[in-house]
Amino acid sequence: MTKEAPPPAKPTNTIMDKSSELECYLYFMWNAWSYDLCAKIFADTCYERLWYWWKRKVDEIGATGAAASWYLVLDGGNRRRIRKAAVSYYNKEG
Image 1: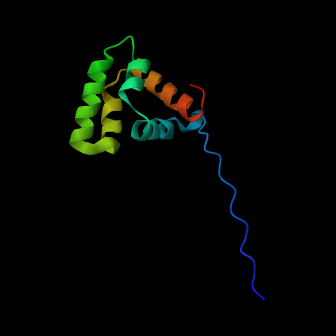
Image 2 (image 1 turned 30 degrees about the vertical axis):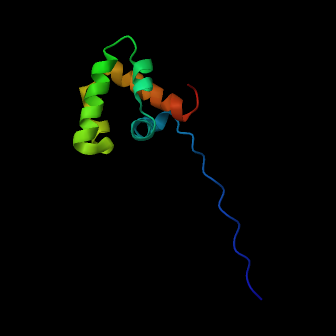
Image 3 (image 1 turned 180 degrees about the horizontal axis):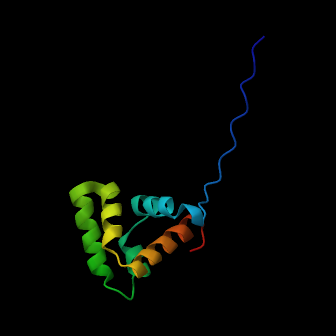
């Protein structure tokens, strides 16, 4: 008599809450970040400069390193914007 395989594990909740802003930001930058999102989030700032800087860093060190480097050049207000956008994106709020 053969044993039945256990039922497959239930999928985990993929929604990230506010307590995981860092994860949201990193995944957002690695998987979703685009020129259009940059223009939307930073429409009232120099988004083209920010996008150019991002692309240059990705070419130099890859998206993983660029996400950390890029965050460091943002001022406090722009850091809040990108974190909020990332959390909203992964919580399907925006």
